[in-house]
Image (cartoon, rainbow, N blue to C red; front, side, top):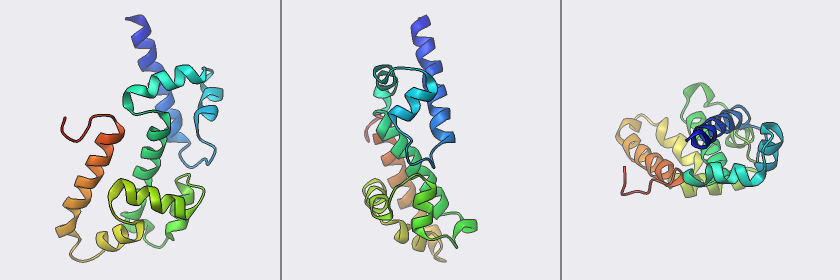
Length: 144
């Protein structure tokens, strides 16, 4: 029981560290292990129930990018700038990951979201986001 509580505390610390460092391109297992003072094996065990550490970092980066792309205050930023600010090394890698996660390109999301008829299409985007989040958190599409 104590071991389980310790793992939960360690996972929360790791998640906070990831959130604070999403823009860092070198954010990964080595980065986390060094800052948390834990082994790679322990880090992987912590994140296994939620899809793995790499998937979790990717999900946090994509979530941040999604919010930036739909934020009117950031509409003036190029997609490549948003990709960099979210920790992606290149716009093409970001675009592929984004399209795979949400089913549309970052540019298409932005155009759809800022279009006057956006209220009619947001529900589809929300469903794609929810499906991606469930998949990355290991909940599957059919479970809730």
